[in-house]
Length: 141
Image (cartoon, rainbow, N blue to C red):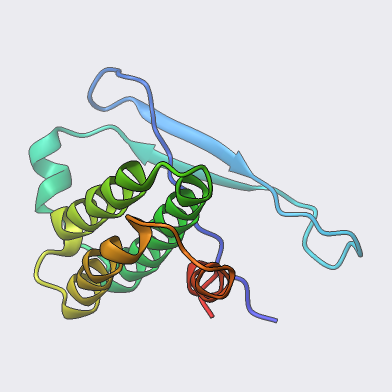
């Protein structure tokens, strides 16, 4: 089995050149994963330096898929609660967020377009069959 864990880290404000360090450990029920934690460190740099670094397309695509799945799941819950306009707005916000970091990537733009296309179905009562189909979409099936 191949695992591709994704983390979104938020660091508190601090001084440039300060080193930010985290320790990460993965565990599982069977003990098959390494028990030794990894130490990851980043030097704090100016925002211009961060923006100048090239983006990793595969990471951005994985983040977009995760953001879209979360938005669909949240929208489905809102639809269940008869909060149809909020459900549609949740998908619109997610589509805009994806476009903000797509940087021209066609796969991320396509995912944002799918979210926009789905807004109408979330903005009104959905049948149980539609909800089931959408829950399969939100899990990446």
